[in-house]
Each structure stands twice: as C-alpha cells, then as structure tokens.
Image (tube, rainbow, N blue to C red; front, top):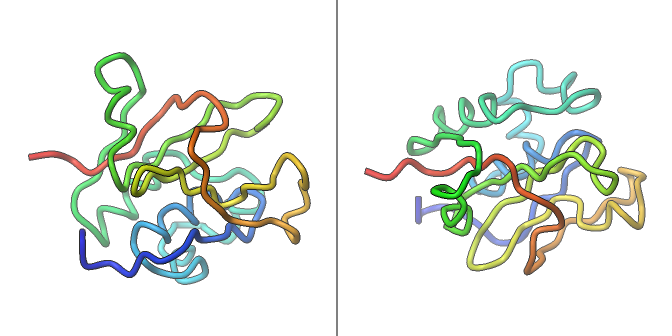
Length: 144
C-alpha cells in the first residue's frame, strides 16, 4: 500500500460522496475516477450514499484486502491505523452519518466545513485531529 500517490484530502463532490472521497484518497485517485468503480455510483452519491460492504468491495478490487467491523472495545484502537475509514454515527450534526479516513495521525475529512455550509458546491476537504462524532463502523486493511 505504500506506493500510492497520497498528497492531499479528496473533496466529495456530491451530497453522499464522502465514502467515495475516502476511497479515492486511499487509492491515490481522483474522485470522478473512483466514483466509476462503484455499482450505481452516480445515483447513490445523490440520494443515499454507500454501505461499508460496498466500499470494501471497491477497495478489494483495487487494493489489498480490506474488511469492515462494528466498533466495540476490541476494535476501537484499530481505527487509528493508517488507511482506515470510519463511519461516524448519524446525529444532529451529521443527519446521514459521515465517512472520514485516517492517515499519518490525522483524520482526512472530505467535507470539513459541512456544519458551516451545507451546500455541496461550497464544500471543502481538509484534515482534523479529532473525530467530529462517534465512530460506529471501521473499514481497515486486513492484517495477516
């Protein structure tokens, strides 16, 4: 996984595209090319987003083996490893939840200004030190 072209956070370009942006970041690809890897991607980024299983399927086509897990005590510390993607629980702050990616001790957020601006046309990607909510699922590289 170290031969990728990771440079900066990938911006999500659709209301439900945070999972796509996280996968694009991990694969070192752009958002549009990554969206094409998802089944019915153009429709799902506009109205429902993606489940962990769908994200894992795309990663496993292009990358080493990934898996997803519900976060409980034995799994909680694994969310901090590089290339993990977490799903932050639905809340007032994130009505449909939100995916973020972990890399080099920071969280890569594909729509970091969501709370200030809920217009996707003005979205910005960035990084943050802390998760903006409670992570309930994690997608991570399988360990051997």
